[in-house]
Image (cartoon, rainbow, N blue to C red; front, side, top):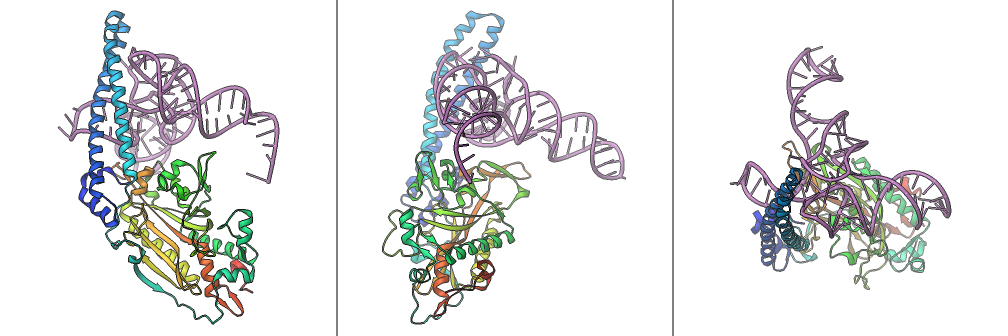
Length: 424
RNA sequence: AGAGGAGUGGCAGAGUGGUCGAAUGCGGCGGUCUUGAAAACCGUUGUACCGCGAGGUACCGGGGGUUCGAAUCCCUCCUCCUCUGCCA
């Protein structure tokens, strides 16, 4: 959520930022925010003075009662009652204004960072760099959904039987490969100074609001109606919410956490013929890194996180490229997002395996996540997160790129974790 | 899941209708003393909103109610503890 002070003081910047995203009616919406804000403040001021008056009368009545002057007390009572009734009405009005303003602010996305390229869709994303060598595969190269059948390591049909489409069963070396990757990613993150946490994979409504999944995007999460809980779409939600409603000391920054969790996404409407094999699932595993950082240092942190992810891809010897998402492709809550894509040789396409973002104060404002400096003022912190990494497409790329007539070669870094060098 | 008890500031803990945003202790911060530290002593120490400011308002688990006035009374929801039940 954007800060109301920012909109008030830098209205033009807010409008320009929203326009860059292609946000419809930026001026109208911002003007409406400012009007609501103005009316909220006026209503607050008059409500406060009415309450102040009523409090004064109540005190007088108390004093008169003590002095035994019942008649005089009764006299003032009617006045006080009238003021109370008036204040109740004013309070309702004030609350309504506050809620309207809040609801409107929830519909406004984050302002893109100045380095975010302007664009309308993924074709406008900036390719920052391309790394690694795309292997030359022979004639017999096949996509991963054929390889997993051939080697019997992942079973989609069985998943359909147990749950439904998009819930694969990993078997034998497939399961072991999965576990190896998780362990490698966790170990690398811990080496980089992240503290490992194991959060719940179901979250309440307040957590969904905190990181921006709610309102509006509830359709993308699985909902447990009975308890009003949601299955996490990413570990970002429970980890970032760990710090909701807290005031941090400067000395404890940055806060660095890593978690491995399954992630659940309904992907409603996104289920088309294009989506095959491991490319898009309802349940998948991911190792997520999250940082809470001082506003002055969050962009250094973003680069550090980007470097960490890059290191993982290098270790896995996968060809990948780095993208700076354009304004039109940027997530709702993000100020800047770098995507990593690995090249899937048999599919002949790039697959997104990681997103790393700086949300600046957007999430922190919803989370009420603040810090207190030497001047004793509380200010909002910056939150960041990145996938390091999401498993299925990594597996897809590993299988496809490392296939040969002999079988699938496991990258060296993973062998200590898998305990085998080949899937044959 | 059933029965009972409880939720107060960073923590512990007082407060059962009126000068209570809240005693006291611990912790934190600043200072005195000390070569330095400890101890002792003194001071200070919640958050948000409105206001240029003086100041005002709200918050004692959440929401609602009674009352001129609620941390205190009533309703409701949530959470925690104890016992019983169930169970990795």
